[in-house]
Image 1 (cartoon, helix red, strand yellow):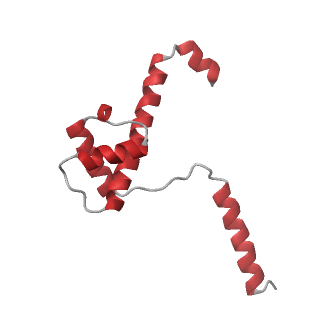
Image 2: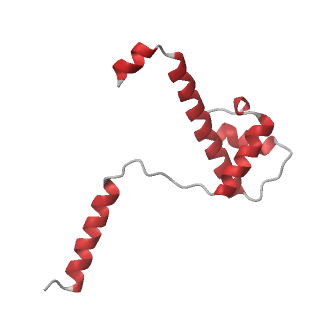
Length: 105
């Protein structure tokens, strides 16, 4: 019979292998961060930001709105950076000819 320590070790190894099989797991943002970011982007447009986190953080600090804390400000700046990069990738995909897209797949 497998002892408690051996079964824990087996479970831990199985869990680690499962985590390694999902390499694209990311950090989850709360709906509060997403909603605040959506309001900021609607008010100031995504084009006023950049793909640099530090620049976005400084831009947010210059806005007249007060953010609840430094942690929230950083999360919003990070999410804006993420959305900016995704938007630019989508624009690049639309601009590249369809033949190139099929060859790259």
